[in-house]
Image (cartoon, rainbow, N blue to C red; front, side, top):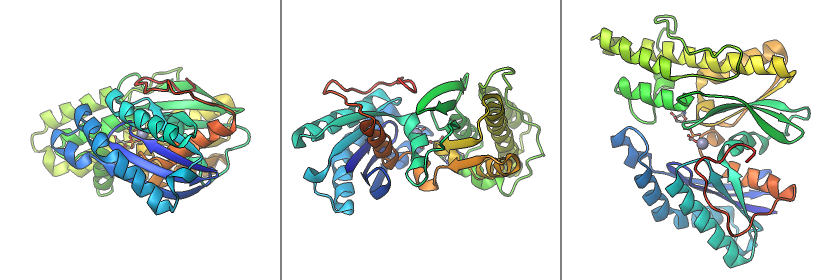
Length: 331
Ligand code: KG4
Ligand code: ZN
């Protein structure tokens, strides 16, 4: 079965062809990051325009690279939400039109669920359920997966982890997106130099990342020559974010009696997060699935994979399918 996946929720226009839910025949990503860079973040109108200009070429390229004629596609899967509404509408309209024109079904996919599904292209789903950590530029959530159902058990009360990376990078005069820049600089910095801390939200599985962002801002204001210690600031900030993510994930595993952790989203590419989770999982004898780097940031292979799974479980969407900016997990 051939699934064509289409992703347009934020600044990446992506398409992929997936065979039988397991084999990625092609995965094409056209990013508008270069056009967003001067603004230090994603401008929704620029993203929508970029999708409009590129979506047909990206889909065409994905089909060509896969060696699959359009009429051989069995299912079209598209990101329904959450995301920027203008960007989502470009993807859903295009996907519906394409599916209708070849007489094939279309399925709307939750972008956050797809970030976890990215793990199951190359691995089996843990049989006894798992704790899922979704860390992206727009969301930070902990989910409990049992018997094929996903339930949100915690989320950020303010900024997403990736958003905090991006905003702190901007304060430090680094490029956009900030996560990879901070990750790189942190390698040569001292993580114990500055005592940054994330809000703990005791008694919950929630996160808070806006306080630490403000703490970095005050630090740069108080220390005029902070430019000389940017690697230390990056390392100390990253250490605190990673600690918060790892602590809550382990807490959730213990609380729900889960022994598998599945991680997805752009921040899952972070070197320190990957290393800490790997170490803790070994120590606790947990199974750990970290989405492969190429499927951590936004891509359409994960959308195809999630759409394929829903289709196999019997879900069918009609032609009223449309983008939903705030689509909830399991919604
Ligand atoms: O999942 P994603 O590609 O897009 C959204 O759905 O938001 O995530 C993008 C986010 C950005 O905030 C980016 O700074 C962050 O992922 N990111 C990282 C790293 N690579 C990407 N954050 C920390 N360390 C990284 N290596
Ligand atoms: Zn994403």
